[in-house]
Length: 290
Image (cartoon, rainbow, N blue to C red; front, side):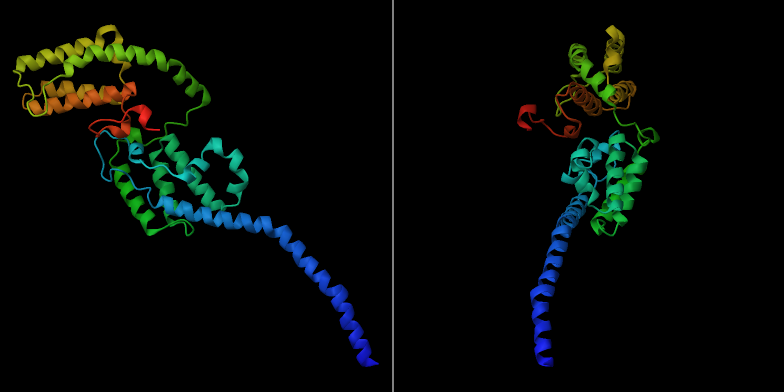
C-alpha cells in the first residue's frame, strides 16, 4: 500500500507540480526577457563608446597658434549623436538602459564641447578615462594630450560660450544671406591687396612700399564698414598682417605667408573653406563632401 501511495504522489507531482514550475519559469523568462535584452544592448553599446573614445585624441596633437581647442576635436562618433539634446527623446529608453554614471559623464563631456567650455571638457574627459566601464589606456593617453592643448589656450577661449538657443540660431540663419553678400563685396575689394607674389618668388618691397600697403589695408578696414564684417579670427589675422608690414625685419616670404593666411580666413568667413581645411592646399567642393 505504501508503494502504491508513493507512486500516486509521484504521478500527481508529474501531472501538476512539474507543469506549474515550468509555467512559472516560462512566465519569469518572458517577463524579464525585455530587461535582459536591454541589458545586453546596453553592454554592447558601452563597448562601442569605449572603442570610439579611444580615438578622441586631439588633431593635431600639439597646440597650434590661434587654433581654438574645440577645432582639435576633429573626429565625430556614433554615440555622440545619441547624446545630443535633440536625440534624447527618441532614445530615452535606450539611454536609461545604460549605466547612470556612464550616461552622466559622457553626456556632460559632449555638452562641454557644444558649450565650448574647455575646463569642463578636460574635467569630464578625465572622468570618463577613469570610468571602469568605458575607460582605457588609450583614453587616458588622449586625456594627457588634451591637457596640453587646453593649457596652451588663452583664458578667453576656455570659459563657456553657451549653448546656442533656438532664437540665436534663427537669428544667425536670418542674416546669413545678407552677411554673405556684404562680405563678398568687401572681401573682393580687399583681395588685390593680399597679392604678394608667388610662394617661390614673393615681392620685395621697400619700406615705403610696405607702408603703402598697410595704409591701403587700413583705408579698406574703415571704408563702408568693411572691418565690421570680419570674424574675430579674420580680424586677428588682419592685424597680424599690418604688424608684419610695419616690421622692417620681416622678410618678403613671411609677409606673403601672413597674407595667404588672411585669404584663408576670408574664405572660411564666406564658407568656401571649412575651418578644418585651413592647412589643406585645395579644399574639396562643397557638393562633393556629402
